[in-house]
Length: 159
Image 1 (cartoon, rainbow, N blue to C red):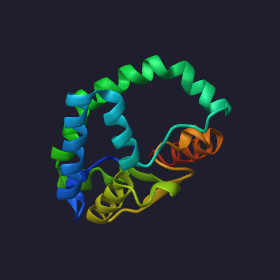
Image 2: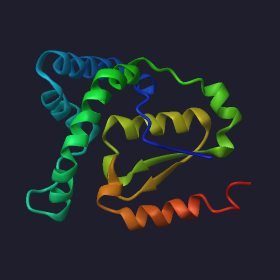
Image 3: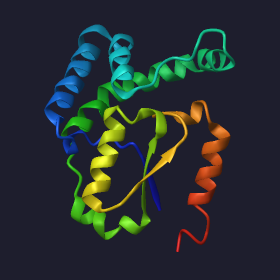
Image 4: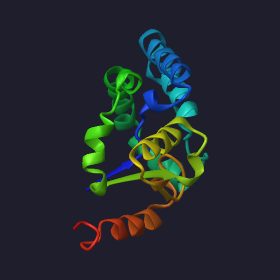
């Protein structure tokens, strides 16, 4: 089973050209001005932001920043451009759709990854399972999401 949480399938959106241009701009910003400035644009487009200063989450993220910066560099340099060019094989996905769970964060409905999930669900005749929070809802709702995942991955569901 695959739980696809807000896959960034830009090409499925009716306004795909807008998002291709946006992702190209973010990539160009990365190449010309570095990962921090590019990531600010990316975060706004995807709908998640930094934790509030002084919170426990803020201090946890501060500890992780060296790793996060390395990940940002890799993501922006090697993955970002693939988002705007990938066209999923919906006929192949339909053949395995019984083992595919399309998921999205309740708080990220207006952002492109959620909207792309809705578009894919429509093409496959499937529904979208909503999780608490936004694109990275596990940051704020880890226990709720873990419980929901346990339910989705229960042995009777995997048959």
